[in-house]
Length: 68
Image (cartoon, rainbow, N blue to C red; front, side, top):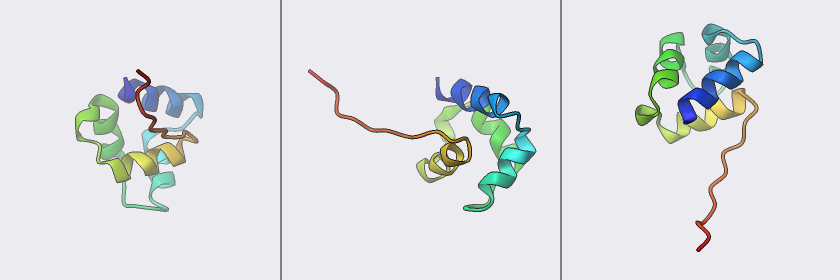
């Protein structure tokens, strides 16, 4: 699940939620509460914020067609 991936990666990088929010703030306004909410539920992460989060966590979003 994406929420667990985001949290695990943040911890892997040794970042607090506050530090991750600061990294994200270079591109778009984030608060520690946003990070906490997104780590609990992926249903409400806007795509543009997910992109910023992934960049700050040194992750890549990839969309591919489903192979039949």
